[in-house]
Image 1 (cartoon, rainbow, N blue to C red):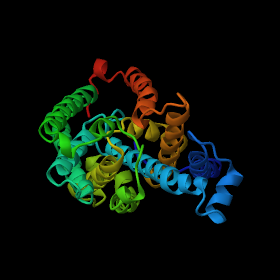
Image 2 (cartoon, rainbow, N blue to C red):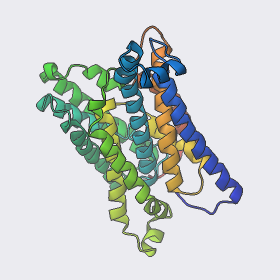
Image 3 (cartoon, rainbow, N blue to C red):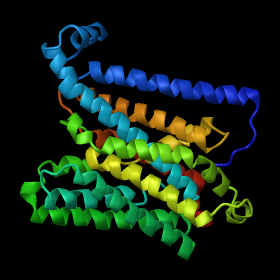
Image 4 (tube, rainbow, N blue to C red):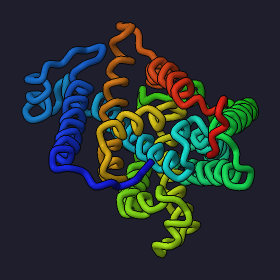
Length: 342
């Protein structure tokens, strides 16, 4: 899944062009995200408000409402997409994703626990979410390795884990209702009402996770050749897998800590990017990060305008897109019928 075959000059140009297009989509989605909403702001009004009218109504809307939402959706989309790339490659399962195998739910459970036990200390939430993501992803990895589970069995195990952790979140909510205002929005996933302060220190975790993923992209390519070949090339397979899974958990946990339990980004985006990127994991990670960021930002705009003047949570829009895509993948892979090994 992450193999690095030789590519022709033509294919190389196509891949670079795709990455440039993804980068442009990030810029376009950010501008649209700032301009569209319950109050429409044109591009000229946006520039005037930012550079010349710092105290105007439009400037306040942009700086305190639109910019935080755009930043949050870009960061979460980037992190979840790259986490999905890593998890799919390490588990050798195209149906795997942070939300599908329960990693998001694990991060969410520990994040909610931190909110309940340490109210007001938002800096503790990303660290707690990371711990939850690590615990869950390692449990799923052990299921895959020890039991030789089929692809569909692994997904079903992830669904079971997600439901169990979801029940855990509901239990915490029952005992700490005063500390968990807005928990419903967190469970659906979204960035309504977010502030830039809530993105700290999660954005640092995401930057570290992306850097680690890029640094370990060579190991990811070697792992895709199979354990025997990887070992013959001198790679410490166990250590590399552990490091990659830790990076995936760091990314998923950080995104969940401020954006909630948004599903399917880590499933959809790697598949789309992989259709255009054939040369290896480094470019796949880069393309997925950009595509995931712009995709989630566009989805956030849809959540504002599709039922205007009412807003819906971002996670609802993503689920409307993700569920049909997931069903399509299951039918395409036919994992349950053939019993493909994870």
